Length: 400
Image 1 (cartoon, rainbow, N blue to C red):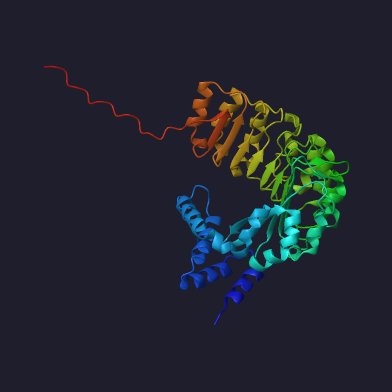
Image 2: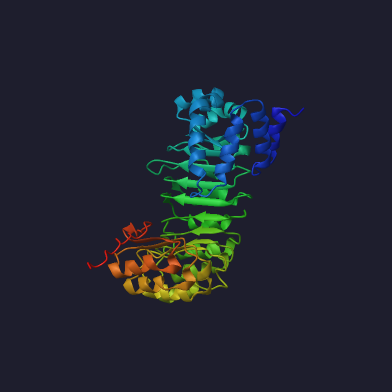
């Protein structure tokens, strides 16, 4: 007879696979345990698109389940809430935790006992805390995703000594970061990195040369790291699917150096990187970006020339998202977009900035090539009427 411990062990051995979770869900459901329904619903929702009509009813049911049973499922972890600890259920089990680092370190053994499948940790950071203390807890070998968030950009100690052998995702927000604090970039399984609103100290950009893992997603919004970032990413990253680098002042030099890293990229965000129309050939080249589906070039002074270049680019037929907001696209460019057959795959088109004239907006809305796209112009989405035209009243026959 299969035991619960064996079923949980099968999940732990294949954390990314839904099949063992669903087997466990069936086992629980057969015994009348509502956790079975929780697993089934969360696994199902995890695989649904936002617009899936089944999503809202499933989320409503999930909310009801967690309101009714959430505290009992947390067990002894409930008492840790008074220490500022928060938990989340993911795909049916306690999968994420957020807390001050000293609380995590103090209660790590209890957390691991009650939540053996927990893999995501978010640290609420304060100045002077020793991040390396986390490495000395039983949580460390389990952490696949680590997020560190501060207030007032504090500087943590010990980040250079924090070893997490299973780390897949690293997010740092609103803390001070020096080059040695990014030692985790060398983690062998690291697949996603995000730095946001951090105070970056001298030499940080050079730390990206440490990347050794199969990095698939790199997000560095408004880090202002300059052309050197393009050189380091271009030289060291060959597996990227998503590259989000808005506000880094890469310029043509940085973008040119970045090109070797773009062969596998599907989502490319180069907003606000000091690119001019003459620099577009650096990006709009099928040999350079053969897979890009989402292309974000807003915030660069490109003007209507960007529209001409994108429409002529052979890969434009593959695009599902195009962002040219605050790029100086005028009415002429807007009308060119409306008649661009090559953009018929778009699902989202952003042209934020100076509003177009009503005629240009009408052309965009009426375009058969943009029929499936949400179009944002100026400060609003263009509305499409779904109401059928009013019927004309029957004409009365002229009097005899």
